[in-house]
Image (cartoon, rainbow, N blue to C red; front, side, top):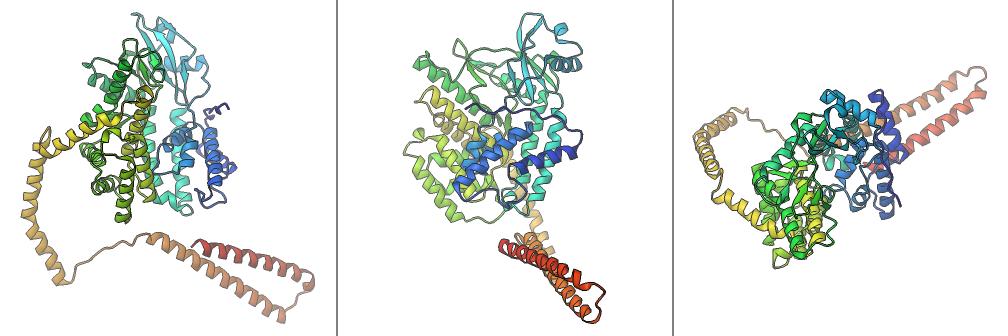
Length: 546
């Protein structure tokens, strides 16, 4: 069956028009109007809703396709049925006419393509929702690739992001899962990533960084940016050729092992040594050149880790390698930073079962992709959400593991991950770059605290003696409870008002009977009866939900 083709929606004239289009599309597919839940209990209905959600994303275009693709990798947020369905989203759209692309190049580079390049192919070699790619040749003879952002995308995407945020706020009272998994936070992280992807200057900077990291490493080929012909909307870099990493037929076992090692190094080394990782290592972006070198393209999706985040990730993988459920639980809680109390003993038990299932005596034989996928399921069961950079790293590691297995079944990402993680952890504890600075800062903090602590204690005791000490507390979920009570009071007031009106009408009719009242009193009674039944049904449904 042919995959449906997504199209870039026509840019609306206003935000209101786009809002109506989005709401109408979601409503047509059964979201946001009648049903007050998103994830079904019944497996068949859940698959049906997942399919309809994918279709809605395809119809709504760029931002929703990108969002669906991101959510398809978040096992800590969505059930498997939704992730499998959203993974079918394809960011492949019909190309724009050559005249439109020519106009963008003229606006950005100051001249038409034929005046800048020795040759320029108007037929694109790839077209996605954000941009499309053309081949060209510079006047000095170098073959290059020109990536052009499609006009209108930079206007439509922010509008869609703003509208989606408003829909989340509107649906949050009826869909507890949106608040439970911090949908606003997920959207905020996604927005930052997508808006960065729209700016080709960011991609050029990413490409230059990875090129500098591997410039002295044999076996890696990263194209050079042609800065003279690159802007925020146009990106020009050297063209690299090779076979896709999925096509390894004819390669010797030794060369397959070498390619696998290079892919693992390319994903892991920048992440753990520099805190920058390539977040999109799929087979379309990785190529094997004739001499066995690894060529990498498309640096639009790059993630970053702070030094503390790197140590936490390294500690997590060391805990997995040692089958230490307690330590792994500690690392997960540190990373996820839960916003509500969690059942730590149950979480530890679930982690223990996961380690027993996937981690044998040797970490080298761990199916890392499967283990990380199951770990995301555990996080979701305990309502823990990973920050976006950690989730992107895990997605990249899972994709990398799958590619390694397809190239060389004997290779494993765990072979490279454990020593690198161990090195980072021990550097953080025993020495290494920055360790002396951290020890010095910790000593200064401890000295400062020891000086200020007596004064702070005296201040608190003084407030207690004067009776001025105030303790502020926050009751978990108090806002939603108060809101439900307000709704119940409003319904009770409406019921009493309706009853009072009925009684008043009956009293008035005993004293005053206007001419012809027998003709319309029956209609009034039936209307009142229907209204009373509708109000009773609404009240019962409301009580059932609360």
